[in-house]
Amino acid sequence: MAPSLLLPNDGNVLVKPDIPSTTDTAPHIQSSTITNGSTLSSVLHRDLHHAPLKVIAAKGNYLTLEDGRQIFDATGGAAVACIGHGDPSVKEAVAQQMDEVSYCHSLFFSSSGAENLAQTLIDSTHGVMARAFIVSSGSEAMEAAMKLARQYFLEVAQPARVRFIARKESYHGTTLGALSMSGHLGRRKLFEPMLLDNVSRVSACNAYRGMRDGETTEGYVRRLAQELDDEFERVGPGTVCAFVAEPVVGAVSSPSLVREQVMAMRCRS
Image 1 (cartoon, rainbow, N blue to C red):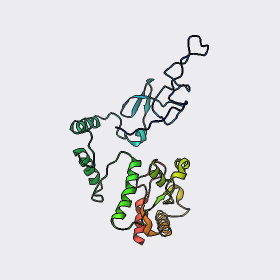
Image 2: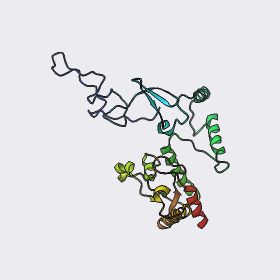
Image 3: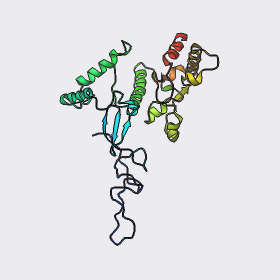
Image 4: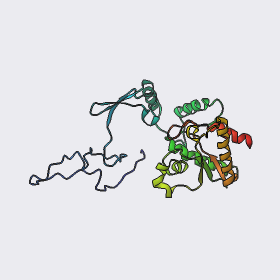
């Protein structure tokens, strides 16, 4: 069963209005709408008072709405359909995999689809990486990475390592663990009292806004590396599980110099 969230009817959404009797003088309301005028839906949409545009078809770069309008999908959804919608090779691959096996529990089984995907990802790193752990979302990947880092240090008998260092203005997901790692203030605000207190942050690697007048790129990288090194020392080097940074940034910051920053720190250490 797919994961879902069921909410009680709060009288504000998901309500089919009462149909007045023939003697009622109130204006008739269609039963297919709710009181705010949006189409009746059992989906908990992002906005409780306004229904989203309904897509009935998608092809290439265009989404077709139920009223016939076409929208140019310039972002590929949330950057997940970058090769376009309805790509024949993707449809063929999905059908082929479902003909073979559509699901198996990874605790006990593997499949050719999982093995081939992992091998493709590993090959793309040219020997830098050795294994891939496949999950369903970025938030889930961050949660898994945090737990994996902790488990590694338990295995090597370093149980004091429970802290993480991340970056300001970063975005790593919206589940509580991933949001704790993120530095995006707007997304964190409502949930701040619930977030983890074992995450600290250093400056974002944003050369456009962060470089000082007359500072070279090399000097900027060295300064950020020193800030990161100082943060390790402040919290205690033996307490840190990982430094978390975006090697490819797109959601909230500019392109990153993370590799140079980390390498500069490693060269000093």
